Amino acid sequence: MRFSEVWKTAIKAIGKNKRRSFLTMIGLVIGISAVITIFSIGRGFENYASELIGLDQFDGSIEFNFSAKSNDFYDSNLDGFTEEDINRLKSIKGVSDVAYYSDGKNGVKYNDQTIDEVGNDGRWNSFKLLKGNGSEVIYGRSIKESDYLNENKVIVIDEVAAKAIRKEYPATLIGESITLQGQLFEVVGIMEERENSGIMTTQEDYVVAEVPENVYESYFSTEYRDVIMVKLTENAIVKDVTEKIEKDLEDYGSNKELGKYTSQDLAGQVDQIRTLLMGITILVSTIGGISLFISGIGVMNMIYISVSERTKEIGVRRAMGGTKNNIMMQFLLEGITLTLLGGIIGYAFGMLFAQGISMVTPFSVKPDLFTILLALGLSVAIGIIFSWLPAKSASKKDIVNLLR
Image (cartoon, rainbow, N blue to C red; front, top):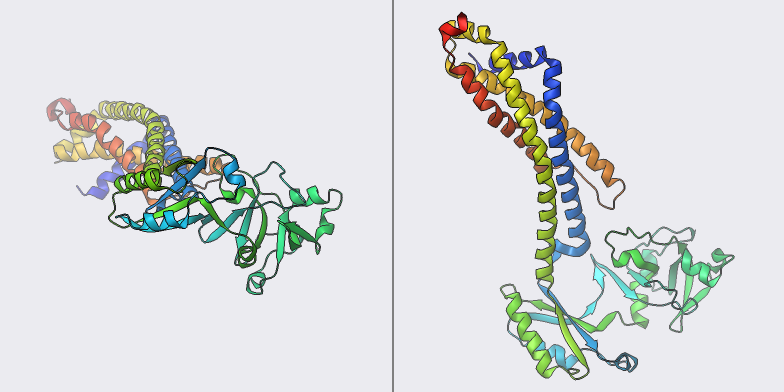
């Protein structure tokens, strides 16, 4: 008997007992949809975190910080790391380059700055330095690429800063000048305040102003001289090189008596975050797997009932030349077809739930090959595992007893 005919017969058998088949599939649909929802959200969050934190962009750099014992150190405008420190660290084996930290991400630079007319308003005042077009504005115009090319001394501020300067009529600031450490910048636009997601934030969430990068850098330093980035060679062992640098700074650091040098092992943090995200996804998905096991028991029960109800049919097919393998394949395919159909429906519901959740979160959920294969794989596996014993019992029945 051809495989296609066996499958058609299996589909017809499922169709004859629509209500029972539907009730059996409910548990499978719930289980698959739960697993797919959790996995989709977990992978969406992992991708979001990877892009946000830079998990996939680790370039072998280690961050070192200097923390002074007294605030008098910062008032004296001394550098946490000197050029002498940098040149000495460059000679350590495994170190490729050492430079002062410059806050940038994906080609965009940021810098902490304060508008003189506003002062400290309790926010983290991050300035975004641009080479191209800036954010949309509610008044005036955005920063343009031509501002960078022509080195125009212009600035776009957010509406909170604008209202702090001119509470009643903030839009009237357009065309006027404000000061940054005594330097005049013309206000050409006012943008909306950045929205903070509340889950994971970056410096982009705290941007209060945008200026052309080259104009800003011609008046202010964008380097943090209390922080350095040490770039390692390709084959360097992160832990060993980090220990060597820490020992060097403890023994020969220019400000070793005035504070403490600490390192930030980005490689270790990357591994920890990856492990944490994957662990949470697997743990919660295991809970969804419980309903899959329960639904598998339901599939087994349904196939056993189907076998007992179709005793004569099995006997006739055996008498007409049907082999034990034909009978076994018949019921095995019924179970697989049932679970596969439930898996497809469960996948659809799971993605709908995940999409709904992603609408109220900062990360997006998209169908991918992994989740599709996961849903289909689980469905087929449940169909085979829980239909095997009923199908095997049907194939072993004696023909004489079947036809009585």
